[in-house]
Length: 204
Length: 204
DNA sequence: CCACTTACTATACGGAGTCCAGAAATTACT
DNA sequence: AGTAATTTCTGGACTCCGTATAGTAAGTGG
Image (cartoon, rainbow over all chains, first blue to last red; front, side, top):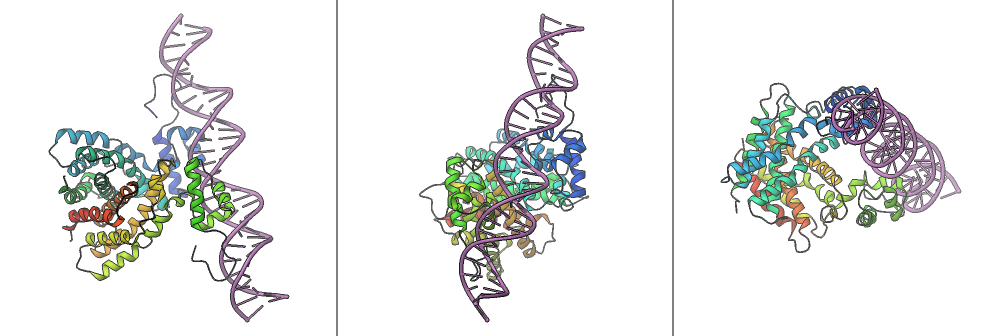
């Protein structure tokens, strides 16, 4: 998945092509009613090749989200380095807003906006939540270092989980708002600020 | 799974027996290295019967937690009815503390305490996220009704996700603290209170 | 002794995900 | 040109999860 090497056989497909093919089929037959075989076939590659582009079927749903979340560690470093006077919760909040701000608002994960018609079900929603949980250890480590807490301390974990939860919920609501939703940044900012306000006093 | 009826063939096993068998195997061979067949065999039942006790393999990990979480809807109603002057975030916080308080502290989900040696990896986050999402829809609905928000409004979602995240993180830290951890209630209470404090002003 | 109810078993099936050996397509070197 | 090196694609086999079903076992109550 690293940006195609300059040598070797060129790629025949792309993650976007596969995701587009999948989206059509999901809308038509639902998520469970669509097999990886069908997706690969519509995209013109073999089933085995599909797994060169996606680790699993559920990853198709979160292509856009994953791309944005990948910038979170960088945003944390950025905020942490630029303004060391901020409390740890405020730093995380700002980093989350930064990620939201840099997200291309035209890219709305159709797992959320079209989740109903695709008949996704709770397990697929959970796969989206798992994305945020995956970031949790990174954020918690950042907070722990910032507050000089010991690893395994509860407080950094709580700060991280609460803020990630708030940001995630705001993003979901944003995606589901349909046409006329504002920017993702405007949705995430008040959510994380409110939560960070409550956590802020505990600077230790 | 309803408490065994007084008529009909008696049960040959129980969720606890199966979970115990699984726990041994997971510690020995890891989660992915253990098949449902092996678990059922060690517990002395057929593979098909296993699925009469658990909907899926991952549910084995959360037996203790699921039992406590089942009381959350009731706790929400309880708090909501007893003290209608409380803000919605505070009500949720109190309900979460109530659930923690009623949890038997000797029952620590080994998915959390032993997650490392069982080599759970992504399976842990996925199944954990599923629990989170399931409770989230319940809590968000409660908050929405309490604040007279429209369904799909962002705020109830944010309140729910932030508080559940905080409570979850606190519970995980508690479980991982090993022998000498205090009560679950004492771990959850400060976490949710802090978050609710920040969300409280927004009573609408 | 016979219904009735509930739980267990055997079996088969489809689909996800993994693995591997080999073929195809391109670049780089001689 | 020809060959080597590299990367991607492909087909097939395999394991396992989860579901469905039809039939059997083991109790309770008339």
